[in-house]
Structures are given as C-alpha cells and as structure tokens.
Length: 221
Image (cartoon, rainbow, N blue to C red; front, side, top):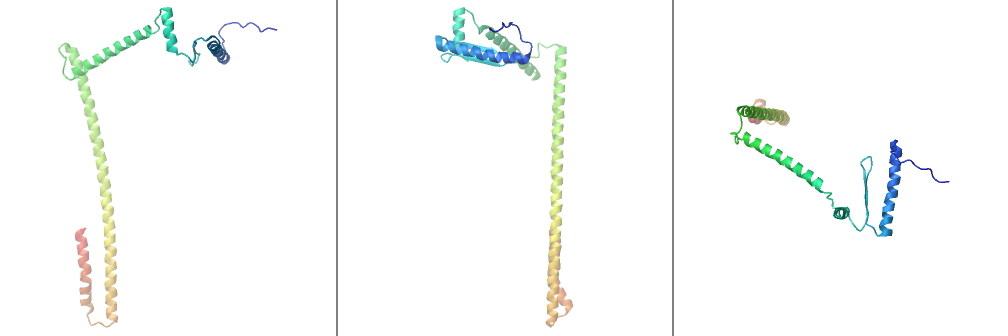
C-alpha cells in the first residue's frame, strides 16, 4: 500500500514545522553529497530556517564565493552590486554627519561664523553657555568631593595622633611608677642594712632623677 499524498502547504504547528524542516534538511544535504561524489558536481547549498538559523553545504573542491562568481559570469548578473550601492549610500551619509560635526566643532571654537544668522549665533551662544555651566558644575563637584576626602584623611590622622599620644602617656606613667617602686625598695633596703643617712636626704637624692625624668617626658609631650 503506497504512502498517501502530502499536501504541500505551510505547516501551522511550529513544532511539527521544525521537525519536518530538520528531516528534509538532512535529506537535501544527503542528496547534495551524493551529487558531489557520483556526478563530480560542485554543489553549494544555503538554508535559513524560520528561527533564523543558517545551515549550509559546499562541495569540498570549491567555495561559496567561487560558485557565486561563476554564477554571475554565466547569468550575466551582479550579486554584489546592490550591496556595494548600499555601502556607498551608508558611507556618504557618514561623511555628511562627520562634516556636520566638524563644522559644529569649528563654530564652537569661534570659526566659520560668517554664514550664521543672528538667531543661529544666539542659539550657538546659548548652547555654549549651557556647556560652560555643565563644566562648572562638574568642576565644583570634583572640588567638593576632594575636600570631603581630605577632611576624612585629616580626621583619621588626628585620631591616630591622639591614640599614639594616649599610648605614650600610659607608657610614661608605667615607667614612672616602676622607677618610683625601685627607689622606695632601695631606701627600705638601705634602712634595713643600717646605712647612716637621713630618710629625707635619701629621698631627695634618690627621687630627684625620677622628677627630672618625668619633667623631661612632659616637655617631650
């Protein structure tokens, strides 16, 4: 029993359409390879799916460009001419935009002003005033930002200085206490050993280096 005839029309279901495209694409590519091997033909195959995916096949002995060039020679048509003309149009538009921008730059530098009318000159002046205002605002913003940054740095340095000063004073106090303790211990040992000296003179002689050291430390601070 033969297969039923398939009506050639667009498949509405997108999934079925994609499955059919994949199967038939594989079949076309297979036929193109067979033509290349069996008939020594040069085949170029280019397919674009409804999802904008490109699939191609080219015989190993040639390239797409070579085949397109041979097609142009055989058919007398020029495949590249429309594309070249579009590129020329695009290039011309870009040149016009470039010339216009260069002219605006010269006018902002005070050149090529003779052909401008009073209204055009007034508009140019207003645009430049707006530009100057933008530059000035940006300058003040940078100054403000830099000032805030330097204030924070100064505050950090002051905090570091105060912290080091507190640590120094604590070390000074500990050293003074340690030295005082040693002097008192020496006096007590001297009294116990019966060294003939008055307690008042011993204190003056022993403690005078302590007070001189403390006075020197205070002067350093």
